[in-house]
Length: 189
Image (cartoon, rainbow, N blue to C red):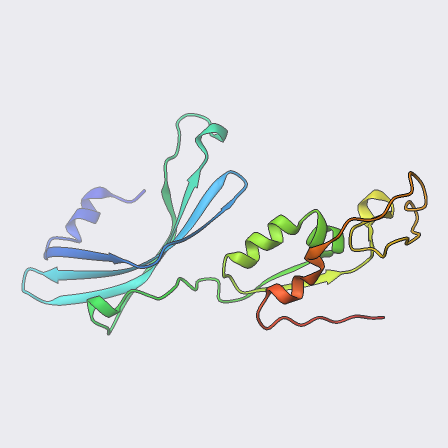
């Protein structure tokens, strides 16, 4: 924490401050809710001068049930403001693009298309730039080769030949590529 007296002194020549908030986007992960908040700030000096700043804040709310006292309420995790040449009414960013670099995710078909699809679909819905490579092994590799829903009906793999004979279920998530703009699919067979 910074020194409050130094913080307050920074406003000695400030007559007023206005804040404008843009469209807040939020997502959750492992007991936390994160939100990105685009903002514009206008500071009016005691001499009548006006300065406009724009930027983004990232807030975090941790589920109180998983915290130990003292509880930490909603807080600002990161933030940045920069001087803007735009007017106050135009300065709010249309989106917070701190993470303009894409997130790269690689995993097997079970982890990305079957068991882990909920996590992948949340990431896709977040609007963040992502690049995903699904390694289609046709089996659950972490269970020793058990057939998964992306496998072919009647496929024989290390463990698929054992157990009760039954038809596989319909797997509509195989159309993963159709859900994403600018998606590309490649196959080795």
